Image (tube, rainbow over all chains, first blue to last red; front, side, top):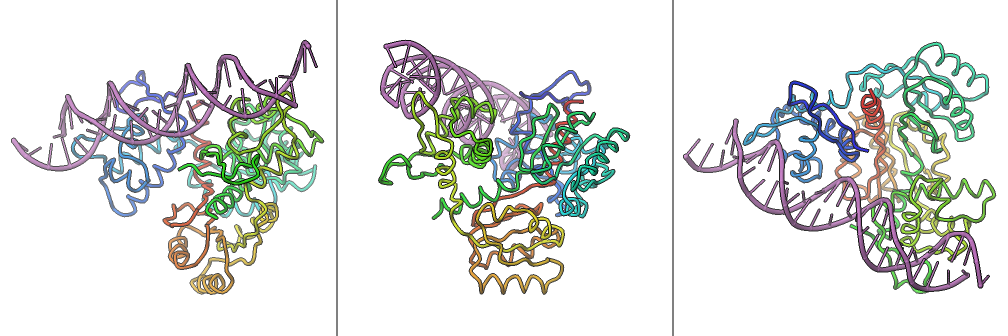
Length: 209
Length: 209
DNA sequence: TAGATTGTTAATCGATTAACAATC
DNA sequence: TAGATTGTTAATCGATTAACAATC
């Protein structure tokens, strides 16, 4: 289950270090934290400082960074800028993927208004309002003719199943799913479970009585 | 860190079972799966079937349900309806919380269009477009005069800090956060990290080369 | 009854934390 | 040099899986 990534400290890529799933999930969090430090004109940091900022232990920070393959300087700490660009590189923000949204009008408007695609270096090529079967056909044609990497699925649940059937026959690399349905696909899928999140919040509120 | 919940199988509430954080996070997933079964007119299930549907092990299903305090019947399995209502009860969907959205026009439109609040039994009382300081003042006044439980924070990052300062002085119970900023509050917060999710997807795509 | 399936205890696995030698 | 802080190994903790007796 663990992935191997090239170790940044060595010149050749034969060395590798295993990055666990939980470490991977912390990658974006590291980047946000480091961006915060840079905006604050902090150019030097330590595992202790990062631990405080991120609510983790210093030990865990060192384990993570070491697994990511980025190194600090004993007795000194880490250079924020180096750390930031190294992790950016590991997270692959450099790469240009292309995306298309298929979803409700409101979701398309919301996602288009956010700078999320620009920030990640993903080119949003087109959007399709999933309101009729003809829209699905247009979506299918477009993806087949334009080598799209990522489908952003933000349909109402009633449309999701039809959309998934189409996606199965497309040559795309991944799906970013905002619908409530668990997708059964062989390619990477990341889910945003909006409904689950509100439920989890209510559950926590109830626990506190 | 673990919470204790009343055991449903016993009449009195003195018994309790510890539900770990990872178990809690699976609660909404159980509910979605059970809802699927009910829609399919399946009224009986087993740990093996649930495991298949949810990509977990049968053993884990039984551990979870046992910790939730719901019981099946040896040699038979579980009654879907009973399971569903029991978990609904544990998740506290019955409770009526009130909420207010403070955010961008697009996020307000999107969240209002989804049935998420209705589904969870949360009453959406008002929305405030975070586009000026006067909107923040209106928001503050409204919350102070209307006993609001949940603030849905869907502001642009530039507005988030100001909003958090106001929220700190409100008597609310929890925050549902869609902004990219980690909130520093003493009340329960659930985050929807939209940007992080796209980054995680791109990272996974890069790993696959 | 025989087959099926739970509920629970014990074993395994993975992730986090602690400790400390190495070294800037 | 002395103090600080990394990088890594070993210890701990928690969550998942396996196994099986209990029983419908």
